[in-house]
Image: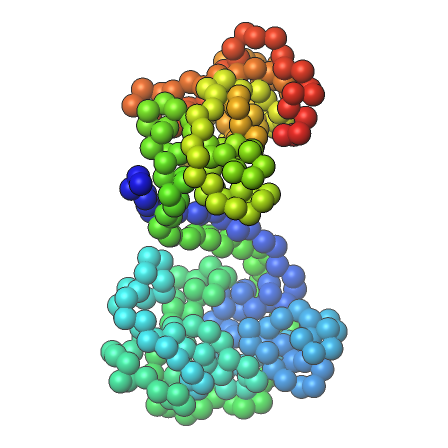
Length: 315
C-alpha cells in the first residue's frame, strides 16, 4: 500500500462587513475609550451590544455606557499563544462582566500564570496605545484592586465624530491535511504525469480524483484505473477577478473536464485559446510545467468537439 501523504494547509481570506448603528457605536466607542452596551426590553444591559433582543427579537437602540472595570466570571489558561493572538506571552481567556453590564465580554487577561487567575477576581481594561475602532482597541484586561465602577450604566447617544461604519476581519485556518490512501495514490501518480481513478465494484463507475468509496453505492473502491490524459470540457466559467498571490492574468477560464474513461469531471484551467472561444464539448489535453507535480492547465487538442450526448451526464 502506498504511503499516505500529509501536508500543512492554510485557508485565509479577509471578511468585510458593514456595521449597523449599534455595532458602529460600540466599535467607535472603543476607539474613544468608551464601552457601550444596549438595554433590552427586560432591562438587561448586553455587552457587547446586539441589534435585536435575543428574547423578543425586537430592535434595540437604547445605548448606555458601562465601566471599564469588571469581574471575571470564568476563564481558561492559554500556555502557548498562537500567531495574531492578543498577547505574545501566555495569558488567560476570560469572560468579564463589566460593572453595569448584565452579560460577560470575552477577551484576554494579562497575568503571570494560572495561579494568579480566579473566578471572581477584579479586572480593568488596558487600552491599546493606537486605537482604530475594533475589539483590539482593548489590548487586554489586567488585575485591578481599586474601587468598582458604577453599577447603573449612564445613557449614551451613541454619536461620535467620524464613526466606524465597516470592518475587515481576517479569517485564517491552519491545519494539516491527510488525503488518505486513495488520494495519496492519485497524487503520487500525478508525479509520473498519469491520472488514476478508482472503479466502483458495484456500479463500475470510475471516480477521479478517487475518494476511497463510491459516492453513489457507498462501497469501498480499490481497483485503480488510469484515465485520460485527454478529456472534454463539460462546463466552465470565465474568471474576471485576479486572486491574490496567483500569477495568472484575467480573464481566464476555469472548467469542469471529463477525462476520457472517467465518470466524474475534475477542475482545471483552460489556456492556449482565447477565453471567449472556450465552449462546452471542447476537447483538451494536459500541459505540465517543468518539475511540477500537477497539471498546470489544459489546452485544445484540435479534435472535433465532443457530441453533447457523450458528456451530458457529467454536466
